[in-house]
Length: 149
Ligand code: DQA
Image 1 (cartoon, rainbow, N blue to C red):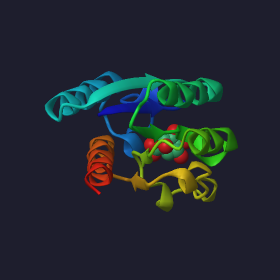
Image 2 (image 1 turned 90 degrees about the vertical axis):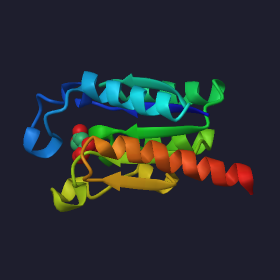
Image 3 (image 1 turned 60 degrees about the vertical axis):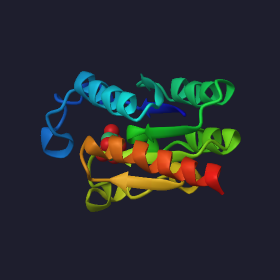
C-alpha cells in the first residue's frame, strides 16, 4: 500500500504557529511520527508540504501517475478557497482523507467551508497531529475492505 501525505501552506510552521490551535509538535516531528507509523504498518509513504496551491495539485496528479492507493491531505487555508484541489482529487479518483489539526468547526465562519470535502471519503478535525495517523489507519482499513470485497 502506498500513500501520499500532503500538507498545504504554513504547515511547515507547525510548532511555531499559533500553538493554541496547532500544538507544539514541529513539522519535522510530524514527519517522523508519520514515517514511523507507516513503517510499522508496512505502508509506503510519500510526504510533501508546499505553500503553493499548484504544487499541491501537481502532487495529487503525481500520486495518480505513481499508482498511490490513497492520499491524506491537510490543505491548510486552501481548504476554504481551492476549487483546484477539489478538482484534482476528483480527477484522480484516489481515495482521500481530509485532516485538520484544529477543530475548524468551532472557529471562524470562513473556516466552515471546505471545497475539497465533497471529494473525500472522510474528514478528521481537532485531533491534533494524531489526526494524520488516524487518517492513515482509516484509509488503510477502507482500502483493505475494498480489497476484500
Ligand atoms: C488547518 C485549519 C485551516 O483553517 C488553517 O488555515 C490551517 C490549518 C488545520 O490543520 O487545522 O492552515 O487546516
